[in-house]
Amino acid sequence: MTTTTVRRRVRSAALLTIATAIAFALTWLGPGALAVGFPELVPSPRAHPAPSSTCVDGTMVVVAHEDDDLLFASPDLAADIASGRCVHTVFLTAGDDAQGTAYWKGREAGSEAAYAAMAGVADRWTASVTTVLGHDLRTMTLVGEPQISLVFVRLPDGNRSGAGMAVHDHESLMKLWLGSLSTIHAVDGSTSFTASGLEQTLAALITSDAPTTIRTMDWTRAFDTGDHADHTATALFVRSAAVASTDASRRSVDLLSYEGYPAWTRPPNVADLGLRRKAAAVTAYAPFDPDLCLHPWCALAVATSARVARQYAVAEMHLPQDGAVPGP
Image 1 (tube, rainbow, N blue to C red):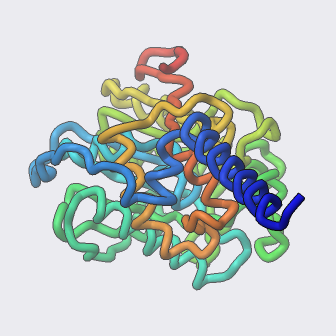
Image 2: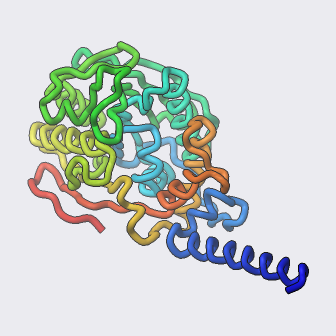
């Protein structure tokens, strides 16, 4: 066999490998593989009107970490913003991953950049403190669209297993929910919560914001069955707080539960305008989070692409009525 023949066969094998990888990306990762890794290859969807400065209904989003809303509860979240709704998002943990203050503050800045991108306005925010039942909560309000605000509670990241991190004395939301931890402390020392105190604070926020829709993580999946323990615990606290809030006020609220990490096992279901909105928000967030590499050569970009191409609401409760029903 000549050297030229060997080179041709090697080249053909390489091209086949690349073609196979692209086919896998398009069929399983979904169009998110292009939207995140090669955004210039995805045609821009039709333009949509800028959000109105007047609120239309209201949405509260409560998640564990600063990218959960973007990866798991969007494009529903992006559509809320585009329609001019009031959108108030609460992040229960700092998402610090035991990496220090600079890391979690960067993630907060990433969230701000993502929401500004979704709203189509400059990334400028007004900082304030919201005091709820004696707890001081860092609040950021978007200058260009003041009906959008973010609340950073800054509790410690509990580790995927819920075991907690040594730097925070192994505190976690899962332990607080299960009763093996009496009090959890914010990483910046700003406040602390018992389980009942956290539930009551969330209920008070729900009552104050008066949303018609609440979006949170998956409460249907047990701990240690594939999702991050912080996701599960957050969802359980939110469901309990929402029930308490609506039972007291008798206001009608739709509470939706979104699947976290395990959603990648399902077929891609985000495309067109929703995909473009979601990918744009994730792309705006990514430069502020060193752990979220979106370059095609990064292994994590594969996981992010899979998440961008999927959104699954797995349960829904219409409150104050009891009961949960499967989502779409």
